[in-house]
Length: 441
Image 1: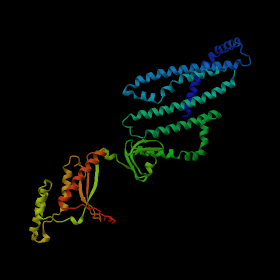
Image 2 (image 1 turned 135 degrees about the vertical axis):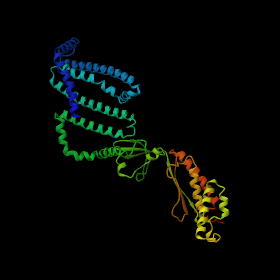
Image 3 (image 1 turned 90 degrees about the vertical axis):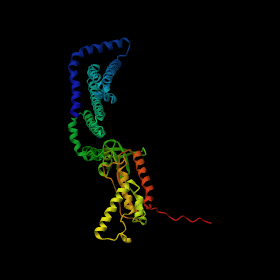
Image 4 (image 1 turned 120 degrees about the vertical axis):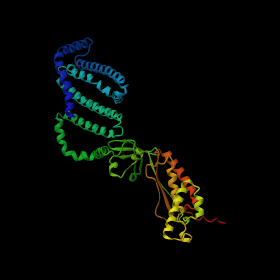
């Protein structure tokens, strides 16, 4: 970076060095003629050189401004014309980041560099001072040019599908920090007359201080690399970080911060390294499959669970989902009783089909016949451990949408139906009923 800055400065200086030797004499003639003109206007001898130099500086700056203005307008038109083609979107990004404006400064900068020795002819101290200012300006110009280029490449890569969800802001910020750091070192070296490489060598003792100052940036940079290499988070991912109470879509990943848009439209800002230091849940897999899980239980009052009589079973055979299942179970029970010689008229040997078993089978078959429930992914109805609040009958399935509103509508429709059907099986849903406060007379 520093070598590049010196190379560009040397190139600008070298490109005009020979020209200076050729036009020194004409320049002296111009200066003499302008001074003679000022003398004819009655300008005092004591201030004629100052006024003449000021006049020539103004002329040089005006000419440089006109060159820059014309170059800028021309480049912008050219970039606009090319930028209209989708395959050349890079030119539009160059316009958005004012890169055309900075490129248009190259000719004016070279012109000003060539004019400095001519305007301040026979004034070596002024020439040295103005060349010092010029070199500092060139360094600042190179810094601006490289930063604009980094921003342009960041925006250009965002148009590419392979990089659209990558943390490009982080890498662009790292590049800009390096550019600024080396640029400042180069400016300090120019002011002190020291080789910037020597200054960089002397900064080794201050490395601990810099690490403390740029701690968040360093941690963020390392985290950005880990996030990118391991494909942990992409722009647009829905993530949840319980320890930080963060739940929403990632909208930006920069060097030091991650911005998450929560579902209440608030913005959560976290340090980038918090993605590495905390347990994070990424819901991208759910979106990729196009299905979202349902894992919800209906709590059945355990005292309502019973064996069903033959009459009750016949009544329940009217439901298509249950008819084949009941018949099959009855045949299995009859075959078992016959084989074991069990008296099926004994009260303890009635057909061993419970209402909870039929309800669970009905729930599973009802889910299988719904088009909005995936039959290719895990689908089951299971009992969990009994609790004081009832026997949980859990529905575990996946609906074929990840859109939140549609998902909730489907889940509501499923459980509305199942809860309403509980009574058909002579089951009761557990309700934690508290005594009402007695009314005061």
